[in-house]
Image (cartoon, rainbow, N blue to C red; front, side, top):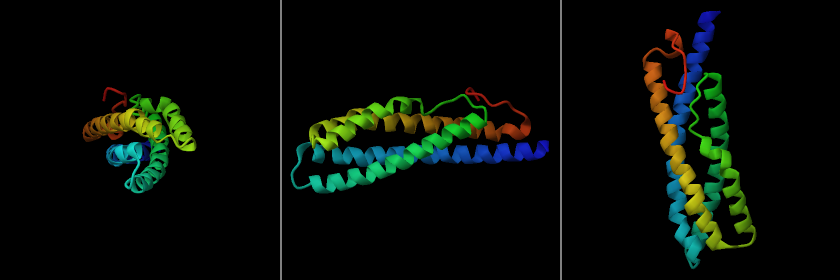
Length: 156
């Protein structure tokens, strides 16, 4: 029975470690895509249509990123790891609400500013902290992780 628990914990650790690393990459790609769109959204003109198409795709990816953040938080909690690379997401609702309002009012300058100064820094922070937590978990895992009876904690 104890071996089954250790195996499940090790599998969860693998999944969370992989999810954190992939999440860091997705956050970086999403941030870069949004930053490419900001000036075109802000200034309008012929490139605005393509920029809005990229922004729409980015919103879909942001929804998936939100789901990933939720699941990774659960995984970290199940492993007993106190590290929270997603604490910045606790206040993301305000920025997202500002984006929705800007879209509804067709306020392209506010939309671009919200993307550039609220959403992109959130994604950059996510990239850094998720990547650092993934590396921390990899070191813990290499040291034996749950299989070696090591206690998990935020300072792994």
